[in-house]
Image 1 (cartoon, rainbow, N blue to C red):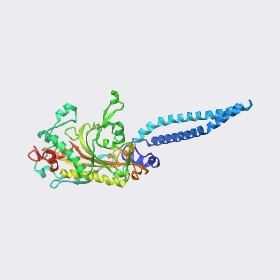
Image 2 (cartoon, rainbow, N blue to C red):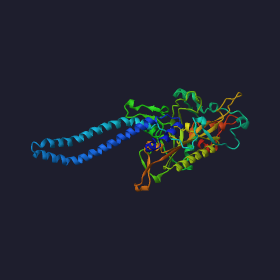
Image 3 (cartoon, helix red, strand yellow):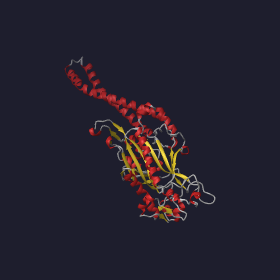
Image 4 (tube, helix red, strand yellow):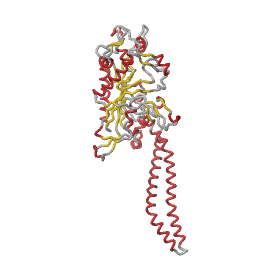
Length: 469
């Protein structure tokens, strides 16, 4: 959730941010509702203060008046009784007014809260303006020695590349028909060396982050409360992508949701906590099964391992101090880790600066990393494909957007407990999502004889196997 004080003081910044992200928000209604809510709260607190003051002061006055009435002459009693009635009626009148304001607050709060959740984090000023992914800007490319994605695969390797669908079929690495039989469309079964390669990618990615870069490995739930999905910014905008477990219909107290990324569990670890500043930054990595409905993706990448409902992902998350320069530095660092990782796998890739229209509600900035996949792109008349880059990673900078929603703060000043608190900043980036990452590994490292060379860094995780096939 965004900072209400900032919204009141700088409404145009949020209006411009929503416009740049192509997200519709009724700011006129929101700001009016917020003002009405704030006014009702202020009036209620003032009346409650008056109520307490009267309770303190009226007791002795009531006692004196009752004594005076008992001793007063008949002609004096009506005036004294009127004073007593006024004293007795004022608290009741205040209670009634407070009750009316309670009703106003209760009526406004749900709608105000729901509207605030739809306000996106404004993009950083240096993010290019654009409508969607077609307007993203390439930052740089990297390719291993001896391979250039700009040149035809066949001209460099001497044979036409096969797609990963052909490779997994011929090498018996996956079984799509049985996957569909078990779970429907976009389902699969990894078999034999395919399963070994999948696990090797995940295990190497975790070791890479833990042993090389000092991240703390964590195992987190993939079935979570709705609040975790709201807190991390995946609801309400992405609700249609999540699998919903309706426990409330079976007598449960609340529904649950399957997460689409380990980021949800990692960020939810410290919700409603005040961290010690000295403990920051927190560097977490997890490997988890992820579930996505792929709503709205009908007809897109329906075959193969690119766009599927269930996959496994190694995710890195950093929680740091509320400092823009520190957040920006960590963003570059997380991207650097992934570049090292992909280079060790000898995979060509490129970095794309996402434009405002491709950031989504929660990101101030996002950089996508796409790997070269020879089996993507346009089909060639004589067989094979032109090849194309496909997204494999996204590195996000969110500032305090998630941490406000999760109520995750830190206290400055060490262990004294006397320093001011501030909302943390958060960042995240994919380390490896498989089986999608298997696609460039299989296609880039395929050989003329139909085998696939296994990158050296993965061989220890595959029992020393050097080739598949």
